[in-house]
Image (cartoon, rainbow, N blue to C red; front, top):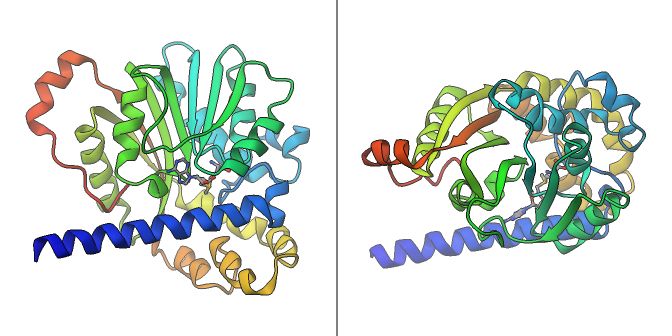
Length: 293
Ligand SMILES: C[S@@+](CC[C@H](N)C(=O)[O-])C[C@H]1O[C@@H](n2cnc3c(N)ncnc32)[C@H](O)[C@@H]1O
């Protein structure tokens, strides 16, 4: 009975992962999305520089979400600028360009499960010798323990699943920072924040902040709807409805769930615990919950 339930759950998870993988393969291989630099909800208003920076001229709100995650949200926690940075789920590489602008002295690595995405990212990084993109799975990062002093991620953690936090924590050096954004269908930010804090502790991370960004995300989705609708007009009709819903366009169930308060979007900033603190709190660690990340 228990075995059957476990197998059922594993099959369900494997199916969900396969659908996600196909969705991104289509998006990055065939759809108009592959021409952009980002694949995220956006954040409004955007800081002025993102609108003025040529590679982001069509997607300043998407660049703004990356800027919030990898710059705004972490400024008060960074003692010195990070020198080795990892993005998990780099998509088409726009976030890597934001990181290169903000941390020009750093070595920056982006990974994505999708081979097309990694290739598009690598092309976008031409002329930036300190940045690279690889195809790799966030569930099993191909890096030694403690390789990075800053890890960030946008819209990816829930695709990677429960391994996201433990793998990111393993790749971070003690004292290193992680900042990541997640969006979920859930009516309660407070509940999600509580679960994610607990999961951070369980993964060896001390949560420093969980920031509710649903309002700037909704503002971005509304402001960006005409541009996305024009883009989706070029998507073959069997996929158009699915893509419109994924983009949160007005008139779709997903848009309704945003404006009706049935979704949360937040940014988590956490720090890899030093070994001493880790020993002190080890009794507190629980199994990570499946529902958030
Ligand atoms: C919503 S997109 C975000 C892309 C990018 N961060 C951005 O802001 O434009 C999520 C990304 O996660 C990637 N992804 C999904 N599962 C992954 C995994 N297990 N490991 C690494 N990347 C993954 C997808 O291929 C996709 O590029």
